[in-house]
Length: 335
Image (cartoon, rainbow, N blue to C red; front, top):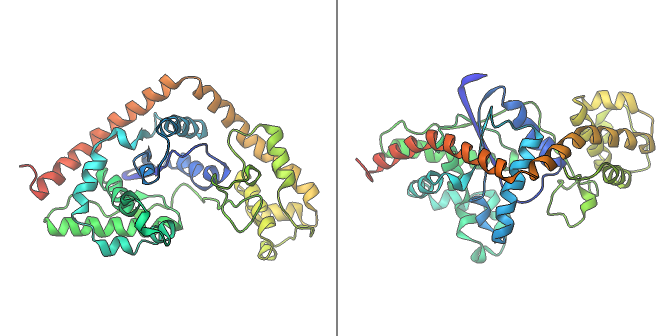
């Protein structure tokens, strides 16, 4: 582990995790735990940008904590907590709102995409989302943040805010973070019904995704019915360029087994999906069944989940509160 590297990442508690979350981010987080000091938080404050039934939001926080732990996030190795349990996130966000600029936020691609043509009806929280994200990162003086392509712009904004704040107030308080490329490769998992769309829990068809709670027979059924084409698998990944569904299934198999796509195709070249799909289903069950069992165990002990999150919040606050205090002093709110 690199003692000079502190990694921070968050995930919104919006319901159960699926295979895309697992292969695209969570298993990478698990590997990061041995490479750096890690803080992982449930971004419940960020979830306020959309209306969610209060009881559902509260239940989702526990459910996401259980899913992360079941997937391999170890509270003894990493700091796992709910964002709202550390009030310094909100307070630092407001301080940084004085540094961030409207022009910067207006240029955020995610804001444009999510607000669309209805910007007048979008929440202020959605517009200000990147500033809270900057506060999340800068509060812990995180050096690295694991992000996907859609979040790189937000890390650049965080860097801009950190640099401007330090310059305006003649301090070295905030660290301009870097994207984190450790933890191995993150897989980009697409829908089982449309190889051009990301696997998503918002897709109305449950057949489009593999949930971490899916029973073995459901996994087999979903893989069997996954959209494919009639051609056999080639021996070269380049030949899958115009076959998005085939490319997706091969990529999933490679991510699960830790093989390259070339190695997978070398084994299945010339064979059809009638042979490949059962092998993929077996690999998925081997990955998910133990996680599902652990998740069910954790669900039965909500008090233990609350204890883990409370302990994580205490540890996070011990790191973040002194940084907030320095920020308040820098802007003249305290001596």
